[in-house]
Length: 530
Image (cartoon, rainbow, N blue to C red):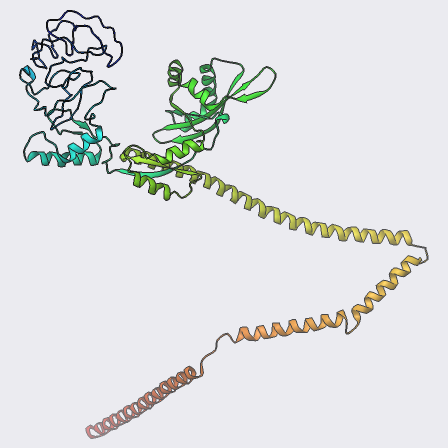
C-alpha cells in the first residue's frame, strides 16, 4: 500500500473487510512503504511515528488505524499550542492510539523536524463516532487565536503579529499566521471581526411561484436589449427546444450598473384543448440551470438567472431569526427593530465596500429611473394642462356661439310666429300670455319691488365707486407730530433763506456805494488834471 497510515513494518498484506469509518477488523496491516506513517521504518520523510512491531489495530477502509502500543497520535493528543486535536481520525484498541500514528514531537521525526507539538496525556482515539476529549478547533477559534495570542515566533514580536492580524481581520482580507504547527487562517469579509459591515433593506418579493417570473441578467445595455428584444425572445424559444406549445413573454426590462440589463420573462404553455397556463418559476429556473442550457444562454449574453418568488412565513421567520454569517446578532436584531416597513422590507447585510458600491450603483440607477419617470409624468401633466386650457377656451367659445344661435333661433321663431298668426284674432292662450306679461311688467316697475331694489343697488354701487375714487386720491396720510416737525423744519429753512437774502442785499448796497465812490474820485482827478 502506498500510504499505510499506522501499519506494522513486518506484517503481510491485509484483506479489508470493513468498509465504514471506524469499523473494527481483525486483519493485519499491509507492508510499509517509503512514507512509513507509523511503521518501523522512518522512510523518505523520516517516519511520522515511533518504532512499532505490533499488528494494526482495528481501523477503517482507509487503514487510518494506529498501532496499539504507540505513545500518541499526529492530531490525537492534547497539545499546548496550535490546533489542539484531541483524537485522530481512526479507531484504536489501547489508550493513546490515534488515527494518524504517533506525535510529531517524538524522536525520529526525520526531514520535517519537530513542530513542537508535545503530548501531555494519552487519550483514547476514535473515528467520527468515538468519544473524543477535545474537538477540532473551529475557524472562529483559529481567528481568535491569531488576533489575541499567536505563538509563531515565541517572543515580543508575536504581539506585533497579533496587531497585524487584527488589522487584517478588521479589513477582512489577508492571512493570519499564529502557529508553526498550523496553516494560517484566511480573513475574509465574512469574518465576525470585519468592521466594514452594515445592514440595509430590500423589498420583499411579491410574485408567486405560479406567476412564473424568472429574471435573466444580460451583459448588454438596456437600449441594445430593447432593440433586439424580439431576437432575444426567439433565442430563448430555441433554448426551450422550439416547442410550439410554449411561448416566451417579456414582463419587464430594467437597466443595471456596469452596462447590464435585467429582463423578466415568463413562459406560457398552451394545451391542445385551448387552455393556457404559466410554467412555474421554480420549474423554469431548474430547466435554465442545466449545464447544456446554461451554455446556450451564455451564448446569447445571459450571465445569470434567478427567481424572485415570495417567501413563505416559515422561510421569512427563519431568515429573520438567524443572523447572516459574520453579522453581529445584536446589530441584526436592531436592524429588525429599525425596519421602517416590516411588511414590505427585509434587512439585508452589506459586507465590504464592493457590496456597498453595488447597492449605491443600483440606488443611483433606480434614482435615475425614478427621475426619468417623474419627467415623463411632468411632461404629461404639462400637456394635460395645455389641453385643459384649450378645452376651457373652446367651451367658452361654444357657449357664446350657443347663446348667439339661441338668440337667432328665437328671432326666427318670433318672425315665423308673427307671419303664421297674421290676419288671425288674438286667441285665448295668447291673451293669457299677454296678461302674464303685463303682470310681470307691473311688478318690475313697482317702486317697492324689483325696480326699487335695483335703483337702490345702483345708488349704492355709485356711492362705493365715489368713495373708492376719493380713497384712491388720498393715498397717503401723515401723523400730526411728524407733520408738525416737517413744518418747523421748513420754517427754519425759510428763516435761513431770508437771512441769507438780507445779507446779500446789504452786500449789494455796499458794492454800489463803493462803485459810486470810485466814480466820484475819478471825476475829481480828471478836473485837477485838466
